[in-house]
Image (cartoon, rainbow, N blue to C red; front, top):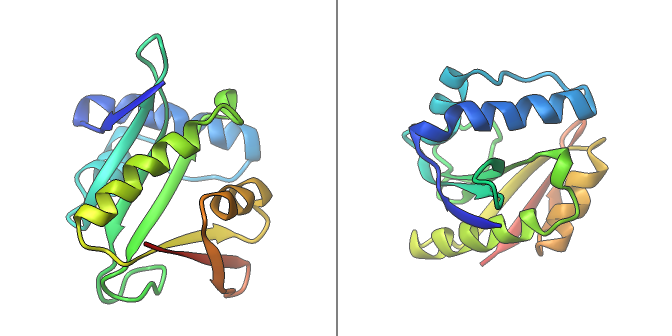
Length: 152
């Protein structure tokens, strides 16, 4: 597997990954190309969106890194990074998340970030374990959510 910056050409495959996650966990979320473009690839607060590509050239996961601005929907402190991770269940436990976070961490350091926030549903045990494994620690627990922070 390898990683690279996401482009508009990846939007449909990134949407497919989101639909595979929806099929796996039942959590509804938008997954169309317009949503992927606006939320991950062309978001004005985006620092980097990274895709993981398998040997056949297919997108199997992606991770977005944004800069927290005033009034962001996660109540993340302004100036921190905000990370979002989406990995196809077909490749869980194959190192995709670790590979993605290595690229994201490097982008965060290059952007001068000191902290990255992850906003995870309290019932998302695999997401919570993932962020713990990447070195995040819980710093806030709003209703139904666990917010973790990684100090860079």
